[in-house]
Structures are given as structure tokens and as C-alpha cells.
Amino acid sequence: MSNSITDKNKQVNYLKERLQIFVEVLDAIDPETADVEDIDKLIQMLDDVEDKMDQFKGRDDLTKE
Image 1 (tube, rainbow, N blue to C red):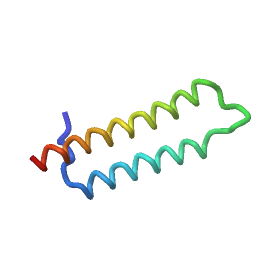
Image 2 (image 1 turned 180 degrees about the vertical axis):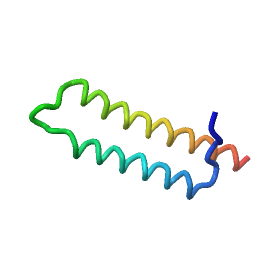
Image 3 (image 1 turned 180 degrees about the horizontal axis):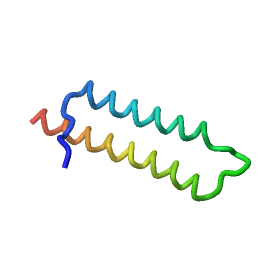
Image 4 (image 1 turned 90 degrees about the horizontal axis):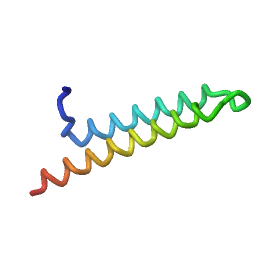
């Protein structure tokens, strides 16, 4: 298991990197040949980023207590 990212700047950088990967994958998809599986992968990538944002938000809430 990896270490948790608790530093706010590192969290933001992580999310930026993940979104940059998403954009690169999106740019690489040919709209003429894209299929449902490709779209499902993109949706999963966004869901993963959203889950990570929720995790980071939960960690931030814990440090305020």
C-alpha cells in the first residue's frame, strides 16, 4: 500500500497530473473509431479522479478536528 498524500500542494499536483493524463488519452482517441469501451474507460478515469478528490477532502476535514 502506498503512503497517503496529506500535503495540500501535493494533492493538487496529483489531481492535475491525473487530469493531464485524461486529456492526453482523450486527444488520442479517434472519434471515428471510438467505441463504447473507450468511452467507458474515459468515464472510469473521471470517476477515479472524483474518488481521489473525495479522499483528499476527507483527509483535509480530519486535519481540522
